[in-house]
Amino acid sequence: MFKKRFIKYVLAGFCLFPAYAFANSYEALETMLDKKMRTLDRIHLRYANELLTVRNDSGFEEYFEYENDPPKRKQALASIQKLSLYTHSRFNMDEMCLISRPVTLPDGKVITPEIMRISGNKIATNDELSLEEGDNPFYEPSFKLKDQEVRIQSAYISHDSHRWVVAYSTPVVLSNGSIPAFLHYERYLGEYIDQLLTFLENKRLIVMDDTGLVLADSVKTISLQLKHDLSESAQEDPKQYFSPIYSEFIKWKSAILAGKKLKEQIPLDNKQCLFVSAPHHQLKISIILVSCP
Image (tube, rainbow, N blue to C red; front, side, top):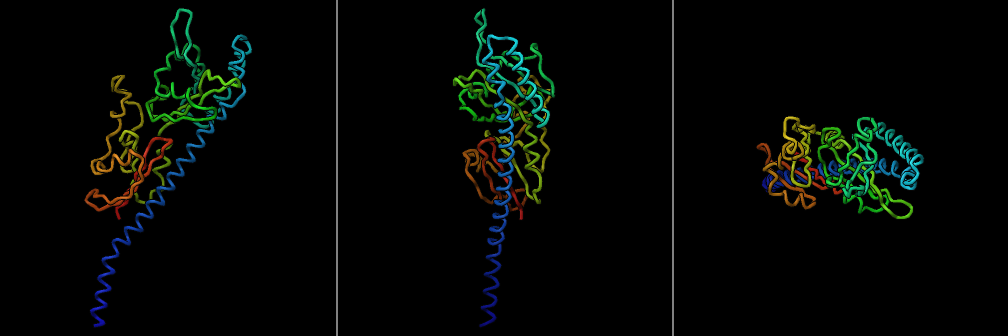
């Protein structure tokens, strides 16, 4: 009788072991995912604060206040450029620029010009400044922000640095409440990816954007550099650089894009694996963390 009971308890223990092991694996994955999310939060907060530090310089108020005083306006612009150049160099930005509201020229033509741009540790000359910034997806939304509010644009190819970047923008709100321009800068997408792909402890990490494309995968090399062999229009198409989310994850794609936190089992590479996922709403990406115990 004792022997039968012993065998019964042993078999029961074996049956419970997989569930126990999976529960522990889920907990480890969720702990690691939480750490990755906190890392992104720290990066995002630091980068947003860098932008606001420049924006809060008194030179912006002076530049627009001295609209009818060219010498003083030039001096205020020089102050903005100096601080922007210092910040650009110190924090390794791809590009920083000050972009104006639409301006109507004497001939009736409407332009949406750059007032100032720093790229490659160099201040752009007047001839190098763009007059047509209005078509950028971050243009109109940036003017709808409140003072000290920062907006992030989903990753895109930068024409300045020729690689995939994340853009931050904040409005220049003057003391009278008007918003004549916004400050904008670009950061290399790879900076975020590199932080996420460290200390994975044999886990697999996948980064998916808000359209379902894979921006990064810890077991694959995905280039973030401009593909010069493509046509000009194709160079800006994310599908030329990033693949759709893998077929194994298709059944959860909608839930991931909807911003849901998931904890699921998945067959992957002929193994029964586990994954957890969560969105980072500010950066408009989702992190998928996989373990095959």
